[in-house]
Length: 321
Image 1 (cartoon, rainbow, N blue to C red):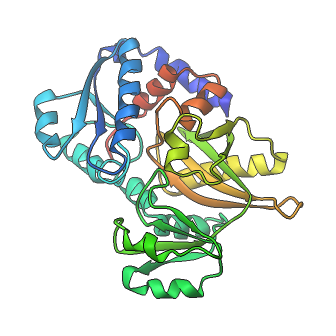
Image 2: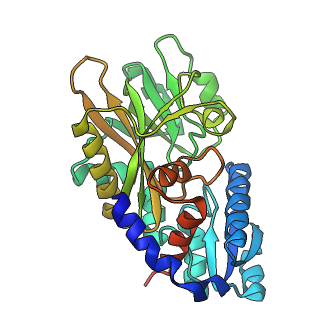
C-alpha cells in the first residue's frame, strides 16, 4: 500500500501549477469539536503555506456562504470536525457553490456520521460489528436489561464525545441526565481487548496502529491531551489480523463511498488467548490533523511528510457529481 500511495504522490508533486491555487482552510465551526478543528486547521494551513500555496484560514460560522462568495477560493481544505463540517452539510454547500473540497462527499459523510447506518451497511458488506441498537431518551429504562459492561454513545458525534462504558456497579442515570447529544442513544456490547485504527488514503490502507491509554479508555482527553495515549505503530499483531484490519478498513471506505482520507476504528478481542475476533466500530471521514493525530503519524510511517499528505488530499479534492 505504501508503494501505491507514494506512486500517486509523484504525480501530485509534479503539478507545480497547483501551487498557485488559492486554498481556503475551513476550521472551527460551532460543534463540540471546535477546538480540535482549530488545531487541525492551523497545522494544515501552516504546512500548505510552507509548500507554496496561497492560503486563507476561515473560522466557519453561519455566514460561510457569503465569506466564500467574496473570497472565491480555488479549493477548500476541510479541517472541520463534528456536525456541520463532517455530516454532509458543508459538503452540500460547497457542491452548490461549485468549490472543490477535500475528504468525502455528502452521502458518504452523512452515512459515516450516523453510527447506526454505518454499522448496518458495513455489516451487510461482511464486517463483524458489536451487537447493539439505538434507544430513544424515553426508553432508557430498557438499559437495565443490558448485560454489563456495555457502551453508551451518541448516534452522531466524533472524538469519543459522549461515550461512556457502563460497568456492573456503575450508575448511568446521572450520566444520561446530562445527555446533550440528541434524542437517540446508541447502546453496544462492550468488546474487551485492544484498540486498533487504520487510515485509508485514496483507497489504500496506510497501516495498523494500536492505541493504549493509562486512563483505561481512549476518551476525548486521552486523544488530545499530551501523554493521554500511546500509539504503537505498526501494531504488534498476528499477520492474519493485520491483513484483516487493513482489508476491512479499505472495504469500509469503499462501501460507504468515501474519498480522500478516512480512519476506521476496530476492537481486537484476544482476551481468551486465541487468535480472537476483530470488530469494526466506525469510520471517521474527517480524521484529526493535530500534532497527536493518527493519520499524519501513519502517513509518516508510510514515508510521507505532513505536507505531502495534504498535497495528496488537495489533488483528490472535488465536488460531488
